[in-house]
Image (cartoon, rainbow, N blue to C red; front, side, top):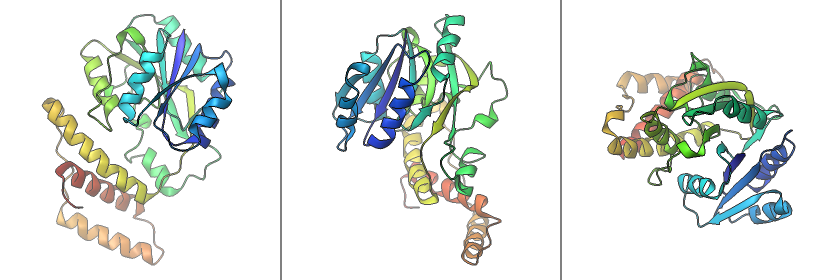
Length: 282
């Protein structure tokens, strides 16, 4: 049986869309486990409306890793499909994950699906950059679909055998999936990729949101490297010439010239990451 685990926190409207899409899957998943990570919005009502069609686990707000662990603990299936609460499963997504594990029953086999912006969302220049060279999903960097690097184990849309899983590290607010993937690689993880197992990302991003997140990513990376020194990577260098070019790009933005916007986004993201990593003001 395949269990879908959906951690959620204060995203009631989009969670409803996520659950509706899972209910419409043919065939349906063996079960859907939703972990309410201490939501204070209408999430309890959204979950109550669905009655016994889903299983609900509730906890005080403990973060993404704790919610995923609670979902695995509650799941009864031998395969666990992690899906973010703002990811809308397209028809066949669950079936493709289930078939992968049926055809490859070895414990170490895992399948990565694809996530991209939902068609109903206006994809801005910034959002396009995030997926193509920016710090979001890097699916376009996958060279071999049969042997995907462990760093790309994105729990927005990925399935693993329950017997092979280990707990997510609750000390990490971000990178909990990458850190788990690193540990699982030591046990022989084989991550494959099927772009047809497609989820629509029902979220909008702005440069300001990306900067805030990249500061948090930098903070989490510092924690990750403290735990696993062998994964250490220096934060991006912020050279003076980079700052000069960035100021020039910002000046051009103000007069309506946007040719250097991607480069400016990259500079801002690197600056925020470095500030978070080093614990300094950006």
